[in-house]
Length: 168
Image (cartoon, rainbow, N blue to C red; front, side):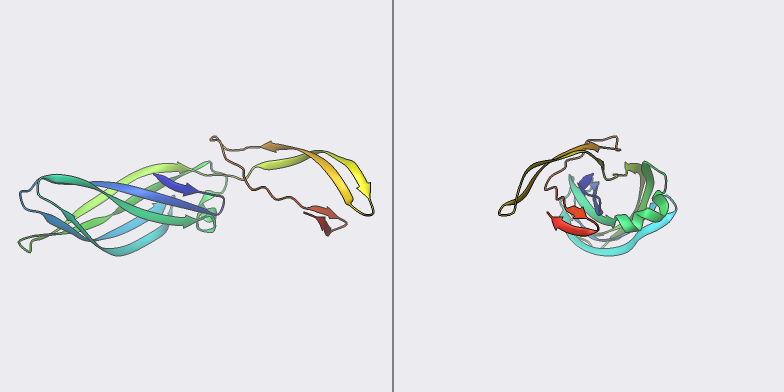
């Protein structure tokens, strides 16, 4: 699942469904996870966890993964989505001091987001005075190159004349 996506970073949440069919409870004591995106290993980590799973029950475990656009750029050239493979193991301890390592592995793909293209269509001077400055009306076309809708908020524009920023 995507927890958050921006043009700077990608926050993924890999949900692992854990079922304990035994009568005695077990504890998730740790994990090893390796995330390969296309051909690059972007995550290779061990983690210690303390999650108790009672006997004959199930639970979900969220493995958070944070990636930056700079990490993805070398493998993303010319692509609209990236394939990934997550592998590793989960380490369990039982109430009777039994330990068990279970392998995990699955693959999929996630889409890449590209910034919108903004084209200035019209710039009209609405009012100009020495005392109040210049009031402009700007009309722009925004093109979304992605297959999914994107939310644009908190837009910030600047007016530059001869490479000098004169208004924001």
